[in-house]
Length: 227
Image: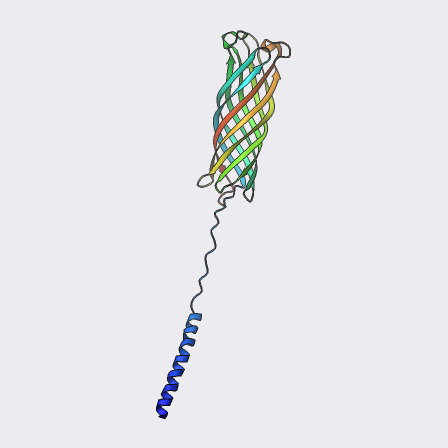
């Protein structure tokens, strides 16, 4: 009887100790920490250099003669800097392009189409404002435009002037692997007018104006990316 009672007590003690041992084993189990979330945000901030090229069309008005239709290509270099605040991207960009925009007037006042206007170079300094969707940045832009207006007339000296005007437009830029991005943009450029006078065959106040519509594509190298 005593032996059976002692055996029963030992069995109950063993059963009571089993959950405690299992709890102790669970307490010694290694703890695993979840990895930090991976950020998918893209930062456009920093300085960049690039190249651009494209073409355009426009018009030049000669006072007393009429309209000259313009078309041609452009190519040049770009430099800029971006600041990003959340998804808003603000920037300042400048460029200098060789320009082949030109055209002639075929009216009776300019026989043989010899009255013409051309723009041999174009430069802009613009602000940019965009909203980033990760690696895609649509933007609007506007600012100062400076270019060379050349007027040619048959048998006359003609004239030229470097004029300051304005430009406004928009575009979209895509981040590429590494430090590169690609963009496409449209700009409307108004360089105003200059007085060519009797050198262009008109009255002393003969004015020649120029307005262009430009489509360009380009690539930029961003120095701050990847750091």
